[in-house]
Image (cartoon, rainbow, N blue to C red):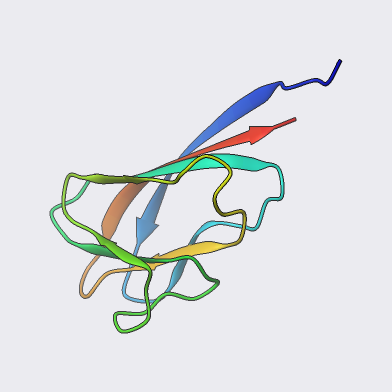
Length: 95
């Protein structure tokens, strides 16, 4: 019988005007959730580097993005236009 044990890792990340890593590539990732706990829009890229002109999606203030199950296991980064923003990141992986 296969072991389907999962674990959730939660962390707070301060995102600035330079590309900030949110998650590293993880081949055991099942899903992730990013909650923007700030008053600023956060541009998120399914890539090593995010910019205001190269991003996957924008997460508006006080909202979240939840990945599809078994969707993306590569690196994720984020950036804001000015100042800083705090995002809450949950990564769910198998052991």
